[in-house]
Structures are given as C-alpha cells and as structure tokens.
Image (cartoon, rainbow, N blue to C red; front, side, top):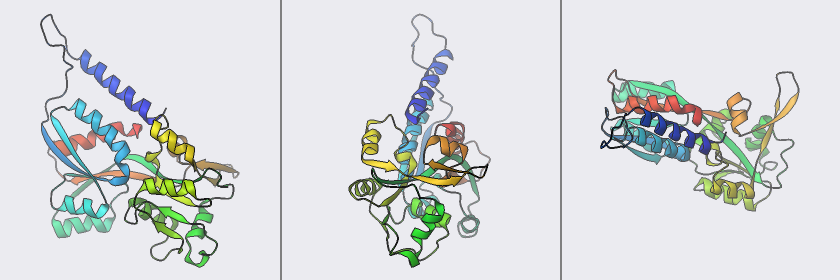
Length: 289
C-alpha cells in the first residue's frame, strides 16, 4: 500500500475513533473529540530531505492534538545541531543515529544528556535517465565509481546538496571519508538532480527515497515518467542473484542496501512533555513512513 493511501486511512481511522469516543445528545455540539491534555508549541529541526514524509505526519499530529502547534524547520545537520544546542528546537529529526563522539560532545560541551529513538526507515534512491542500462550495477561497482583512481571510468555521480545527509550516508556506506572521484558533484536541490538526470544519459543521481515514494501523487507520477529508479544486483540467501531497488517492499525486507535509519533526538528527561509526546507519536506511526 502506498504512503498516501495509508496516511489517508490512518487519518480516517483517527476521525472514526475520535467520533466514537464522544456521545452526543440533541442540542450538543457534534464536533469530533480530540486530545486537549497537551497545549503549547513545539519547535522541531528536521533534515531537509525528510520534508515530504514529515509534512504528512505533522498534519495528522496537529489534528489529533489540536492544542499543540508544531513548528518544523527543514535544515542541514549543521543548522539543526546549532538550533538544538541553543534550545531553539526541542527535537531533531536526523536521517541517521548520532555518533558516540557527537553524544559525548553534547554532554561535555553543552551539558546535554541525549535521548534518541529510531522512528522510521528511509533509503537513498539511485536514479538515471529512462534509457540507463543498470544490468551490471551493484554496490561493488558503485564503490569503484567513487574511487578517485577510476575517475576516467566513472559516470557523473550527482547529489542535491554537498552538505546533505544523503552525501554523508553514501560516502560512509561506501567507505570514503576524504577524496572521491572527480566525477562526484553536487547541485543545489534534489529537484535539480532529477532534472539533470532526466536530460543526460549515463548519469547516476542520489536522492531521498521519500521524494518519489508516493506513487499515487500526481507530482511523483510525472517525475517517474522522466527518470528510472535504478536497481542493484544483489545476492540471495540461497547464493543466487536478484535485483533490488529503492521501493517499499525491498526496504521493508531489508534487501535493499542503501537503507538509512531516521532518528528522533531530544534532551533526556523523565517529564511527560511535548517533545516526548511527538516522538512517541512518530514511533507509533513509523510503519507508515
């Protein structure tokens, strides 16, 4: 089931459950009952690449808790860390777990004790032009393409933003910490990557899967008419080979290699506050990401 249908079904179930939770008599308001225990505003810093899926969950959350306002800023990791340290945001939504070094830095430099929870899976999708031949593409070949020694053999490898979490994830996954092929470059946005790939053959683009996951969305349908989601050759448990790609089935089963964990980070506390409420909501809803 695609994400838009699931999100709609989720919202419908909420409406039905809330309606059943209130008995109305003649003359009473027939307004849907919502939770009003929590009130106030919560500022959240979110990885810019997660905007499509977090927007959907924001709508459901604010309907369910209509006395709480979510103020979500979509930013780079550097901007998110700065906001969190200065208490401009109470929650960070990262496309990866914090490292041990980052946790120690928060504790030692800012006296912040961290609480983080995985709330969903996303993936990095590989895209190419509609005529891209991906029959030989696998993780080993990607590693070769990124190797600076093989720049003459590597196709252009394109990212949306040099400071994005997608860049960091792919380079970490393939084991590159410093120098990479001269054919690796970044544009300004993921939309520019899609446009560039659609107009140029033999180019591999790297974008967050959630940008193209909702195949019922008209915008996504038009995008998928212009590009191809590339598949990777992978080994089966029986020792054979299969093809996997960034799709909901291969992400759920864990067969697709470029899966990344989305983590919610906040300050450690035993208080039942808005931060805890929002993270708890995401954990319950994570099957819909």
